[in-house]
Amino acid sequence: MSKKIGVGIIGCGTIADVYMTNITQHYNNIDLLAVADMYVEKAQQAAEKFNVPKACTVEELLAIDEIEIVLNLTIPMAHYAVDMQVLNAGKHLYSEKPLTLEIDQAKEVVALAKEKGLMAVSAPDTFLGAGAQTCRKLVDEDKIGNVVGFTANMACPGHELWHPAPGFYYKNGGGPMFDMGPYYITTLVSILGPIKRISSFTTIGREERNILGTMTKTEVPTHYSGIIEFENGAIGNINMSFETWSASLPCLELYGTKGTLTVPDPDSFAGAVTLFDGQKLKDMVDAVTDPHPAKIITMVTRQGECKMDQPLVFSYDPDPHTNMRGLGVSDMAQSLIDGRPARLTSEISLHVVEALNAFEISAKTGTAYEMTTTCERTEPMKEDWELWEVK
Image 1 (tube, helix red, strand yellow):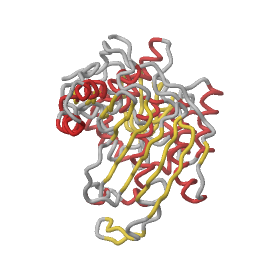
Image 2 (tube, helix red, strand yellow):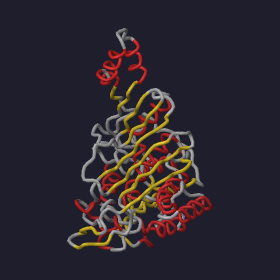
Image 3 (cartoon, helix red, strand yellow):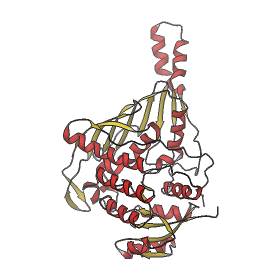
Image 4 (cartoon, helix red, strand yellow):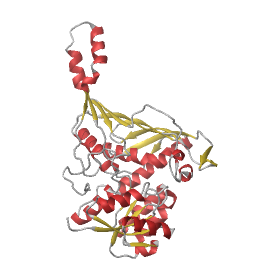
């Protein structure tokens, strides 16, 4: 592949490291030309580490003609301002999640991008990985029938146990829903389509958190329980928590009229996909001619025979834990090369921002939130897609 799209990165914090690693070492259709940060020394350190040609200010980066796509990797509170700055400079925008913190801000970003003929999207891009794409294919092929329900769960005790700078997770723009919810909601939308309405309850478990040795006030909810109804009729629960020390909940399961589909962790690009074949269980039970108790015993003891691991639709890397962040940027770049729509769209990113806010609004008002935005599912990833190189 000869053509590459020039990209620049604004924000050289913790998450930037994996993006820079993948762009410079794995994705063969994008070229990292410059990095910028409000602390110029951080940009200089990043440029030296990853052999990036230029470390500079944001204004200098946006003035580089060869840069067509800009990654906004700043903290969530800064996303809106930087998003608008990028678009006004005439660059395509790929922001870390979420696109913005507020619905009206996201609408403004999307409207400006449309006015200028630019793309404006946000992470996550994990739904483009082999795990979620395999699940979408199985659902589209009617392997579990009509999806009537699901459960989505992210349960952990909080980021201060491991993150080098955990403070903002407990301030405006943080919390488990805005931090981790985008992975789960985007994956669900990519498989099931747009959301119709959301109901939610929230709470704060610990009023203060030990942030790097200082007790700091918690400003956002740290435990969410919600119900999501999709336009296609599927209804399920979602739990997002920074208050759970241990849990035995599946990350994501889909329940259909023909079976159950276990989806890999939405924060990963691959992982085990398991299909439970309900028809197989029915056939085994129907084959039992003994009295009623024998049918119950068969149903309980032989369920393992109905559970089957599914082959992934493609494999960019055999390690399911490989962090392929930047996959959406690479697909965006390829869409420019091929003259086709990117698989991550402004409409999806806007829809997810509204959903994240819907949990807050529903919890405060005590009523279900009716979604005002919608989106279309985009084209699935091609099985012969070869933009990721294992080096």
